[in-house]
Length: 181
Image (cartoon, rainbow, N blue to C red; front, side, top):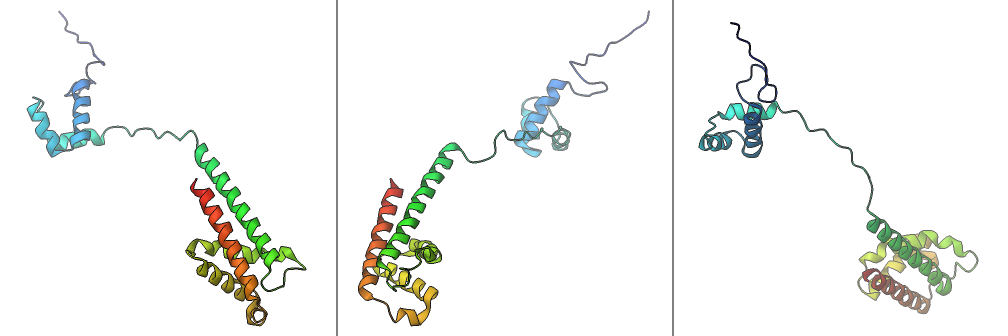
């Protein structure tokens, strides 16, 4: 009489010392608790094993496939918010150009109003630091000095500078109140 035994791949792999179910439980315990704590836990569950075995089983696990994200980018709300904020900054930028053209504290932009772009950009970049009207006036003065030098500042009309400062403060406050809503 011949004895034959059949392989049961669902139960255990060939030459394995553990069933597939026991191996998956030990891997889960090893992943969750690690070596020494996992070994103690398995002893309480009547599955005695060493910490090295748990760690070996975890290391032998295949790496999980990395799934590429479906969509890269910003969500729609953030995009809409960015577009709205960009439109508001554009409105503020255009408002500052109109203010500097209208009040023209140095009297240099009557001929070429498009030459204001660098001044407006630098004023706009520094407005975030201003907390009171005096700081806005100081920013405007510093930027005019930076762009036109001391000789031109000698011709500065203080009343026009005050009107310019008030108009810029008003535009900045309107911008801030619109942004907070």
